[in-house]
Length: 304
Image (cartoon, rainbow, N blue to C red; front, side, top):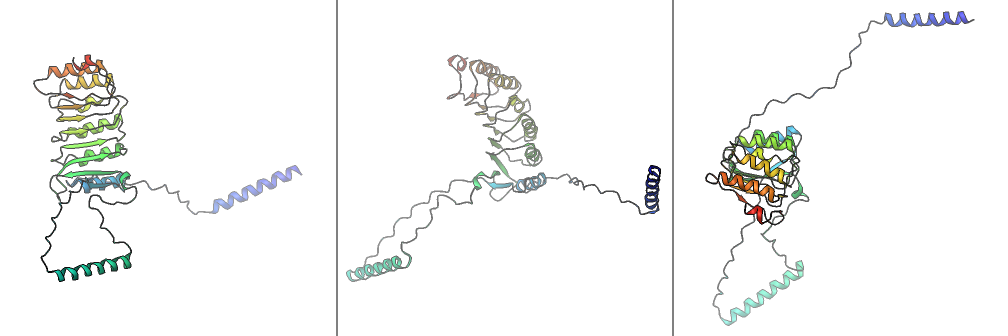
């Protein structure tokens, strides 16, 4: 009985094999998932708003906006009161009665008279203030290619945004100021920013306040070819090690005028290194150190 069972199984296996062998239908290969197509390199047009928004969409930031930097509305000039016309006594009585009737009609129809909205502020949608955006200051109103100041404040900037800046900033010949406050920059992003700044010959002011770095290599912004005249590094947790690296970079820098190091962790030792470097090149440039309030500099460091 055992031999018969084995023989039956072998016959069934051979029959199924013959059945599949007779099927000549070709087997279609499994299609792989379509890989994303590489985008063509983008050529900037000189219009910062159009270039930045287009590259932001490609990088995965479809809601990024470039808006004009808001300004305080001008104070409205008070208009002098018009002189009251000279009329007779009867005319005065009639005009007073008309005014009372108008006031009564306004009170009965709408309750209280509606006051016009003040012109000292503007109303926006909810959470608009907290949405990431790029604010620009134009040299000529309406000419979007003449951007003189760019503000990116209070939101996290990763390497993708900085790569976009390396493409969109060089065509801006009028750009003189770049303000990046509290953007969570890293050591790698600082290197990308330094490379972008080198291609901006007219940039004079760079603000990187509240961007502490682990390695504190802020000296990459102050190379020999740097054109930056005003650098602000407030509240970046710079200690004596960071001050030493900044001092080493200043030995070859000949363009810096002001260096703001307020609210850092620099002690007398770090301040002495910076001041000694400043004395070497004092005839070429002048450094004003703003290290008061929360800094840890004593009389010895400030008078070195």
